Length: 550
Image: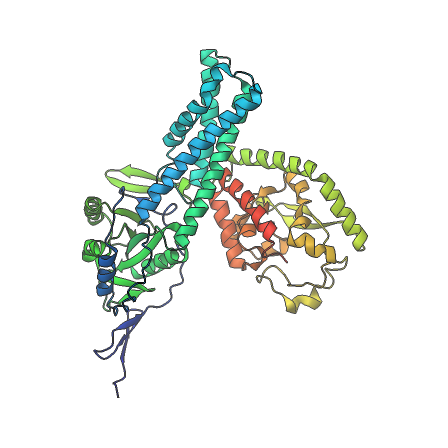
């Protein structure tokens, strides 16, 4: 009969020591502070380049098994072979190649199609060179805008924003060159070819990104990552990387500062030593990346020496400054007396960018309202014919700066729905702030379809055209909600509320109040036109699926 294991508690960890024949296990506590949202493209500073390198997979497995103090897994039967994993750098090189080819092909097709439509079978004359020249020009401009750099490829909105800027530069360059050279350029060719090139490049990159994310979700092309820092920060980053495999970083080991009790693993990832063991851990695991979480012991000259050592091994070093929910465009480096300071720009809540957003919202909102007017009239007629009461439902909401306005929706409930709310209060399925019921008996038959596909919100285009709302923004709150806002929640009122937003494409009514608030604050702090376009695109998919709507 074996002896019971001894238990020792200390330093926030529970360590169980078993007899010698059994290995030691350590249970790490769950840590609940905010997660770092996007380690690669939002909160980290890249400090060294990387190139292609192959690793011995068998040696990786042996080294990892020894360092994690785990028993070796049984050998697979002979004759049963496992398909080799694609190396991360090989996959990224292929992805960059495919992006370049897609951009060149789209530009050539756009130029060819524009010439065909313009000349309609006639000899194009000097325009015959356009299908060959436009791809070279387009690749040069997008390359100068760094759209092929690894830090921008495959994730985030920076890549798409740079492509849009490249398109503006392409159009401006052609116009200015035509004026200076007094050449007789066909405006119809330019007006057609440039937008098609930009939109085609965006679509091609989106499709390639979806393929890349699918491969990473299957475990292909993952960058082996050593996470270094204090226990809390390391645990959070490991949890984030494991829950978002499409980022392409796979934590294979952690290095912690000296503790009274050193665990054998943290969140399922083996502990490979301390700060002095980082390079050995890199060599043993064949890591591609070392991620240093903000910690007093990892800064200044020791961090500089680590960067030099990793550079010799062709390993990338990224550093988390401990800032969360901040998009890359708001971050910049300011070197002062040899010290790199991270500058955090203020959110764009006013000025020229917001004027551009307001003009875009009003113009596009009015256009959609006019185009959808037959559909709006048909829905209004259906609502009136299928239930008693008006077609439109109006309600007071709070807009930018706390100003109240009347929001318009198609009525999806019975006329006396508000009076029956008290009787249904105990059935609330909402997020604690908003009242929601799955299968709400007050919803009419046609209202169920209107809500499922968000058709009941189409009259809000009137609010957008009047400047009271935006196409994209935080959810418009009720005055009763605003009265109970915390200091953090009040920041939602810094921008106009939107018909759609991050909350719409991330779960809609299935989200908790804290999740909805976090998404709205993320939007307020990191707004950009590229983010708006991305949300509008994702809204189409969310509405078609009808998930989270009730």
